[in-house]
Length: 431
Image 1 (cartoon, rainbow, N blue to C red):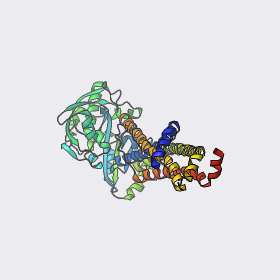
Image 2 (image 1 turned 180 degrees about the horizontal axis):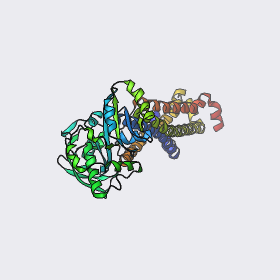
Image 3 (image 1 turned 120 degrees about the vertical axis):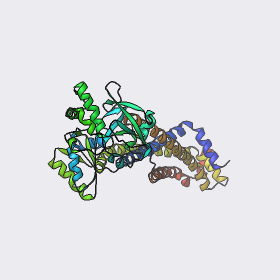
Image 4 (image 1 turned 30 degrees about the vertical axis):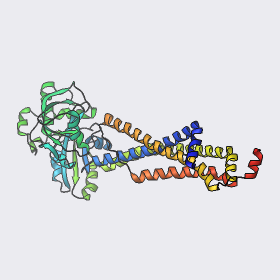
């Protein structure tokens, strides 16, 4: 019988000890691998979702909320700003692209965003089929929206007030699907894109028919209802083009997505807007870094808990092996008298610990996959975020290396007494 079989039989002989040691070590490995991969995947997902947006300008409020609502579309808007600000922004020589967006309605929980054609370019979105929006009440679906809703080219649908799914406050105007984007793995995949005129038309109709007592569910969006009363519906026939005209300047939008021609704009414009206007400018990358610093505290806390469990598990393995060496000293001494070398005795004891570590690594990896599966589904159901898992090989190898080193140290410390074993004394005492 080789050493591996002897070690395996020893483990089977002590099922409770083996189970507790392997289970606790697997939990710590699963926590370490899972939380690190989840943190890395979420950061990559958010950063990838920014597209080419370098600055977002909107109503005063929380800059993080402005970024989450207008760039990543997972929060409520901070309010409205005048459309005339877009015209001023586009005239600035430092600005490469300034895309106005307006939103506040949804279809089955999918946000409907009114914007110009530059919006799709910000996210490098290409058409899978159909065409871009040309007139009001036309819409292009993000790839996720098309798959989940089942809508196809030529289908029609009505939008609902608010950013969450509801079938009570529905508008009467029908959108027509004219295009579907290819998958981009960015935020545009889960949006329905139309033009600004569609958003204004829908709410102007409501203004005539319902009195515009409310426009959106969010308190910060109360101002949005005001702009919807400003225009008569007769003017809309002149607004069904992509390039907006100066007569639209008294309308309102939710925010402006900006990209710059050079870094000077990034360094000067946000401060100028925040100091000299009634709007706020937020830098998505900076705000996300702040957010990750906050969430990083939680990640570190969970990681430290996992390391503590790892140490406890390794101490448990050490105690178990050390106890085994003491209890089976006579057997080991007898094997030594029959010609077994110290190295062979080390292998018999050490392989037992190695088997537990290997089993823990396998189960720990499975635990991390199960945990990630549930977390990804949670993000999908709660935030409509399809998290693409990003496995960092270096990070995984580093974690496995830490686990192996601590485990090996525990095993070596446990079998060191074999070197000091007094064979004659052990055999004589046993007699």
